Image (cartoon, rainbow, N blue to C red):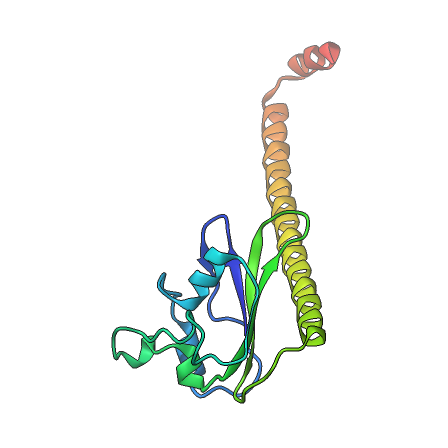
Length: 174
């Protein structure tokens, strides 16, 4: 499960990108509440490798209400072990997302597992940052094209309104 995070506005994009079999994927469409694990991991800013979710101080903390929509993902999906990776853009300290690699059985995370997951997280962060930069450049280009069109229209309007003698005066000044 991969959540894109917009650090400058402190917002998660929902629904997250998900792969696998889910008991209740529809509940992933709702906004991320500030008291969730996701926000806690963002605040801490560190990767976590949790072999037993039932004993982890953050993940095992049940919700205070019985609302099934707010039931924690870990409980709802029967997750026993999880790797939680903070996606950092390398050139800055900007967090661009979180990635969860979940297991429905207990899983011991080896050093090799951690290296592979961190490499995957790094690649995901670069891909997210690159996609965002591409979108920004494309939007800037579109904005500039519109500005150029308006300037050309203004130029045409000005030039069409000038008398021929006025046009010669303008040309002489140039």
